[in-house]
Image (cartoon, rainbow, N blue to C red):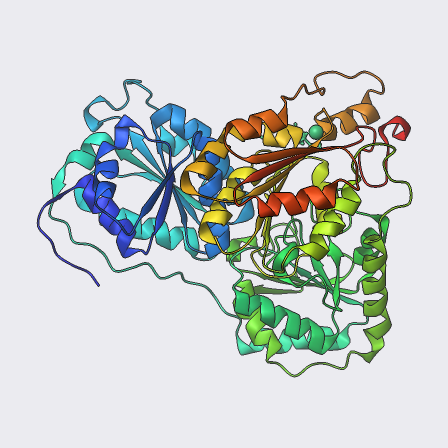
Amino acid sequence: MPTTSGARNGGRLLVDALRVHGVDRLFCVPGESYLEVLDALYDTTEIALVVAKHEGAAANMAEADGKLTGRPGVCFVTRGPGATHGSIGVHTAYHDSTPMILFIGQVQREVRGREAFQEVEFRQMFAPLAKWVAEIESADRIPEYVLRAFQVATSGRPGPVVLSLPEDVLAEESSACDTQPYQAVQAAPGDRDLAALRDELQRASRPLLIAGGSSWSDAGCAALARFADANALPVLASFRRQDLIDNRHRCYAGHLSLGLPPFLQQRVKAADLIVALGSRLGDVTTLTYSVLKPPRIAARLVHVHPDANELNRVYQADLPIVAAPSAAAERLAAIPPVESARWREWTETARREYEQFLAIPDKGPRQGVDMAVVIRHLATALPANATIANGAGNFTVWVHRFFTYKAPHTELAPTSGAMGYGFPAAIAAALRHPDRLTVCIAGDGDFLMYPQELATAAQYGARVLVLVVNNGMYGTIRMHQERRFPGRVSGTGLAGPDFVALAQSFGAHAERVETTEGFAPAFERALAAGRSAVLELRVDPNQITPDRRLDTLA
Ligand SMILES: Cc1ncc(C[n+]2csc(CCOP(=O)(O)OP(=O)(O)O)c2C)c(N)n1
Ligand SMILES: [Mg+2]
């Protein structure tokens, strides 16, 4: 409800606006450029303030919170140094289509443009990174800008918004009124779209549904499973969208990820109808536009996407439908199923191939912990609602291949491929769902981006189990290096710290695991520890993927 109040300073107006929009948690690193905001938070008990130790971590936390809730994750940082650090979270929110708002304290208006202390022109800096970026030039307009920020971040294809806040605007008094709460606006498919889609299915022999994108609700995911089931449609997950359908579902057939295995490449190429539901059909999902070649793929294409601008942008669709994926799935689940007998075998084979791919390869590592066994253990031992977070590195190949995601919003993984994402994201998840287990799986390089956030986890009582997959190198880059420049190791070795001592110094439970058999008991002890835990897993550096060894790559 819009309310009128007396004069408030800009900081108070802003915090009141956040309250109006239902914000209950902010992530930040403090700065003198937004003291009025911090002051207004002093007596705003509805909004919890989580102070990270690095703005990259704070922004990743906000991004993850947006992913988990479907509401904008909110982050505050200070001028140039804070904003440049925090930009990684904005980039990830853009690529991952996650609602997020980054607020930046800015220099006061009267010195703008002089390269004043820490001044950056944020409208230019964030132009290609954010869905919308603006600077609020008067306190009177704070409620208007904040409403628009929430609206833009959540509507159509969700994404990040950046608002720059000159510090004298935050100090300025204004008698502006609060706005009404934002209302995310999403398109739904029309009857004609649904009938045309059903026609496409009726004409198909080897249909394939590729699910992806963001802003899926639990109900939308449930509808996707019903629609697939009713029509016996094989479902593939786009890159890092593996939690859209229970991976145990008889129709789930795999993940279009980095290092796409031949059986999935063939499956995509052999389809005669692709229904892309929410996915952009991006670079990784399509094996750099090779298994689906733009502008016209070999199969017929139904492309359902929440952003009209995405349709016919890269791929020419036979049937473009502008709709939020959840709304589309809910309506599709309600249409009469088509006769699916002619592709029953196609679907069953797709499922069987996926199940075979889950088996632990015979030629495992020759020393250390076998990550295939570890991830299969997690897949069976963790409750269905446990959250799995990761950043970037070859260790993720094991996670994405061997873990079976079972519930929506349990995968926190950056489609942007940002190292360092997983641990801050896991902290955000543990705060959002303290009743659920949160496991972060990180490489040694990946974890070393933000290990100091163990302090943040401890300070706010976020319980995270971190598995540090230690191969003593930047394995992904070493793999590429070995292929291009065999034997010439340059810049890809990694001398890590004593991870156990590091974690213990922050008060976490910590252990080093050196054998596969040692993992399960260490995992139990970590869960029983009652606080965050770090397990350093020593793995065979030669085992660069589940199926490949470094010494036989070239
Ligand atoms: C922020 C960021 N910096 C650099 C990269 C490039 N990069 C991708 S994977 C990788 C190595 C990851 O190393 P580690 O976490 O140890 O995992 P491993 O590949 O060894 O399993 C690097 C440097 C990136 N993706 N993101
Ligand atoms: Mg490594």
